[in-house]
Amino acid sequence: MEKKDICELNIDEMKALMKEYKEPAFRAVQIYGWLHKNKAASFDEMNNIPKTLKEKLSADHFITIMNAEDVLISKLDGTRKYIFALYDGNVIEAVLMKYKHGNSVCISSQVGCAMGCRFCASTIDGCVRSLTAAEMLAEVYRIERDLGERISNIVIMGSGEPLENYDEVVRFLRMISDENGSNISARNITLSTCGIVPNIERLAGEGLPITLALSLHAPSQEKREEIMPIAKRYAIDEVLKACAYYYNETGRRLSFEYSVVKGVNDSEDEAHRLVRLLKRFAGGFKSHEGAFHVNIIPVNPIEEREYESPDRESVERFRLILEKNGINATVRREMGRDISSACGQLRRRHIKNADTGIN
Ligand code: SAH
Image (cartoon, rainbow, N blue to C red; front, top):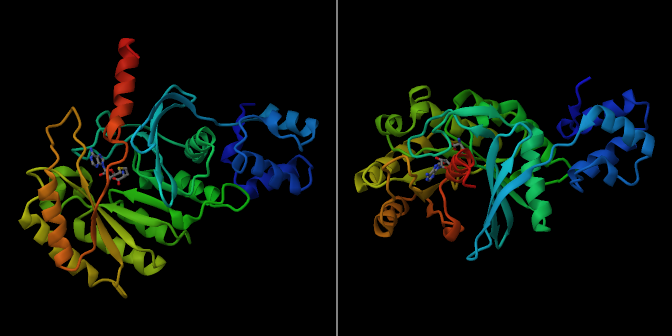
């Protein structure tokens, strides 16, 4: 029999396994705790579990762990960028950011990405495969073990489109917020999507109070189609309607991501159009007081494209237009500037170097 991944089992499934093994139910809580609270990397570590049960567990199961192939640590702010190797040889990226309010981890949800956004490095070679919940958990756990400090916040903003990996991402969200495990509050988790409408609506009904971030990046359908191919599948109005639905159902403040690209979507005219778009959109809310804010991200240039970041002044001008018109907007501070590399770029470089043997 092929071994199964024990880290993929939620607490109820662990209880069912113990029943199958004719073990008492409290063992399920203990084992789940070893895996998801203590972040055990082997069955041997589980020192309050009888040897016979450990043998049974390891005969049928394995534990998913991440192997760090590369870690870059910023001298400026402690940001860490990780390249993790998966069991099948694929590699992914994850990032640790240290804030005053706590440690935040940005995880990948897929190996690569199929969405094709023009400015993003993760998507250049398409999507290889989706990650399992256990692999996403292992990204967080590996970083937590490495750091020796608690992780309090998670953003699903690394490579991949989380809503194209819906079931495993929802499993991940439930397991990481389970009080028998890591117990990270769903309120401290943000999921970023390019706008997969049916799954935004589905997510609204999961009873998970996570924050939804929508990658908007353009104030009009035409411009959005130009930089995000997914816009052809889901029109901007439809996406915003789904966001309003998400807000109305969950009461969670929305975040709109807007990556500003020089000469592409950063003009004053576009800032005004964005104001008009969001004002129209706000009409769909039950109550729109503080319902959303805009996160302006100066684009991180990638080697493969000619996109450039606008200068500081034009970014600030863009932000002020939003603010003066009553739209809450912040410019995202770049973390780990000295180890900077755009989303997905570190991974691409790692793969290229491995291919040429330079590593
Ligand atoms: N697929 C999801 C999540 C991954 S991307 C999504 O589209 O939201 C996470 C965020 O990083 C998105 O807002 C994405 O547009 C942004 N991003 C990707 N590449 C970038 C780059 N080179 N510069 C700035 N932002 C980038």
